[in-house]
Image 1 (cartoon, helix red, strand yellow):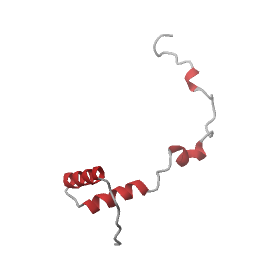
Image 2 (image 1 turned 135 degrees about the vertical axis):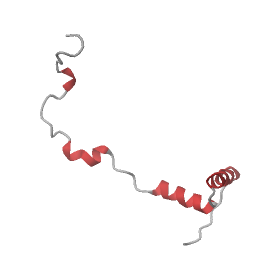
Image 3 (image 1 turned 45 degrees about the vertical axis):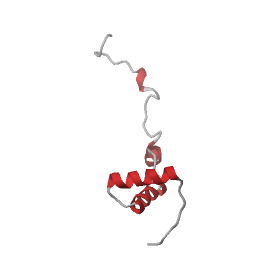
Image 4 (image 1 turned 120 degrees about the vertical axis):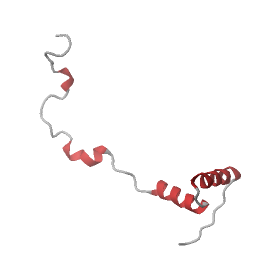
Length: 74
């Protein structure tokens, strides 16, 4: 591992110390986790994952206009 030095204001140090104490971990471990979470690649959206399926279903554009007989009041 490499060593990195950074400057934090008093409020940031207090929050870091509180998180480290609450999780029973070192301040360095908390900082490493926060950096990993913040810099992790973003999860692809549902549209990104299923984009090739968009527009592949035939039928009405708005299925909410279909008459449902036998449900509720007719």
